[in-house]
Image (cartoon, rainbow, N blue to C red):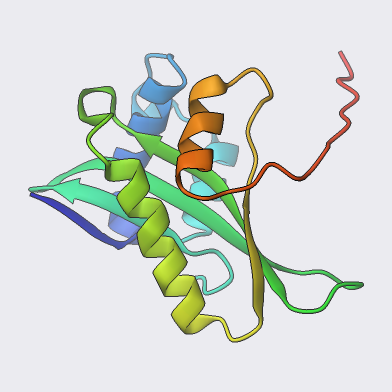
Length: 149
């Protein structure tokens, strides 16, 4: 049975391994860059960076990372989903949906001035776009990127 809960510091290595597999690179948590480790480590206990994990037994099979942003020129708080990741063997079982829905409930009940929840994906990532659309996200932002190579 899948359980959704808040991320804890002790989840860090399992999440980094899951992310490494998602990014299609074989890595041990010890090979993770310090920058990646520091980025993940900022989530547990940070009320401005909610993070959830999906757990089956004692194994983390998915996670969601988010950041709350107070824009200087806009009213209210916006939530930006940074990553949703589910292990290959557990995809297409509703875990990603459960993570996003749990986040939505947590934010709506806990952030008084919440105005939006946003998620970004690459224009070529049809699966992620379909996933977000199925969850009720609307495509309404046009981004321009200068890839400095």
